[in-house]
Length: 150
Image (cartoon, rainbow, N blue to C red; front, side):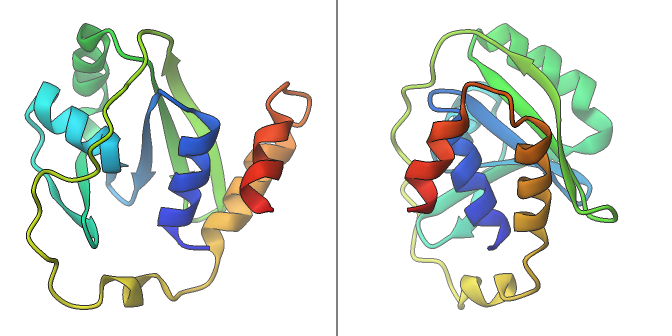
């Protein structure tokens, strides 16, 4: 599983909610969340995968962007991926209005190069996601994962 697959699973779990996940020294959002954050917070879009945008902000600016996210009135959840311990943790969450943005890109031109090659490494994201799901086993949301994995 690549980082993008972990994000897709989290997006399925958090339908209508903006999902940001720490990747290195940035919190990133992709697809429809990236387009919405680009429009609302003027974050710069870059290419995540072919025809899928990505936005992000530095980890050190988390408080600033949480404040900006709160002003949007949208629901959001921010996860921290700890590469050293291969764990995924929920940092903060806000319930608000649903994100009904459907565009996954902002008129992207075709990406250059094979962006999928950079995700051919060990499946550390799946390990982190599994640890996170196991720690929240008593949640009512257990059925959503069954739909995704099948």
